[in-house]
Length: 67
Image (cartoon, rainbow, N blue to C red; front, side, top):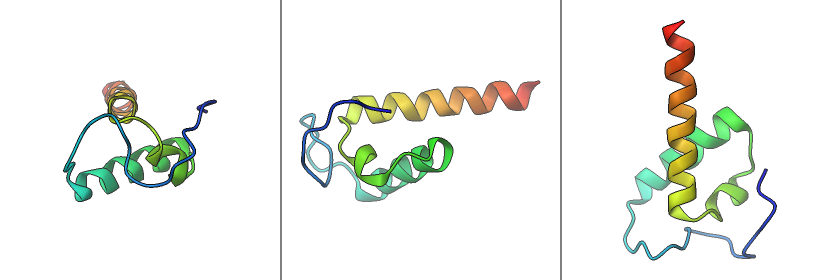
């Protein structure tokens, strides 16, 4: 789990303005489903970090489905 928090709640920072809300919900649901991390913790991640976890989960799923 992440050890560092920013103390805010809501869309992540990182300089991304106008990130599609539907995509944000999708990413949060995906990470929460697989890792069981709290929504607040996922929302507080920087965009790049959240995207990295989405990619990692996808890689795990691909490897599992291949064999």
